[in-house]
Image (cartoon, rainbow, N blue to C red; front, side, top):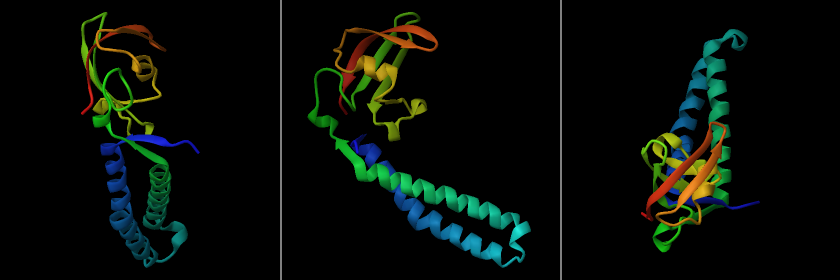
Length: 156
């Protein structure tokens, strides 16, 4: 299987989520299922069915996190410099409307566009990788072609 690139913060965040699910959520849901069973007939017990559904979600997420963590390759941005690579924090300006945006290029499991964490496999990240400060990039997306100028590259 392929390694999953992660930043150190992303790796630690996933580890914390896994610990929380195992030490808090899993025991809580087991307790909730036990209490719901005590209410009698399970076929018409909404609390029981809701608790079992939540348990299924929690166990699925635990397995997903364990899989990601077992394949994780933590990339230390402090050892990187120069052109844009994984874990770079990049400032770009939309050449059409002069809007400035700042993104960090991260692995798929930690990507979250609302937090300016850009999936390394996204069209924008792929266009940015290997470029230098001052370069312009063209990104084709379903919404049309966009042009950006790279104004800053940092490895934090």
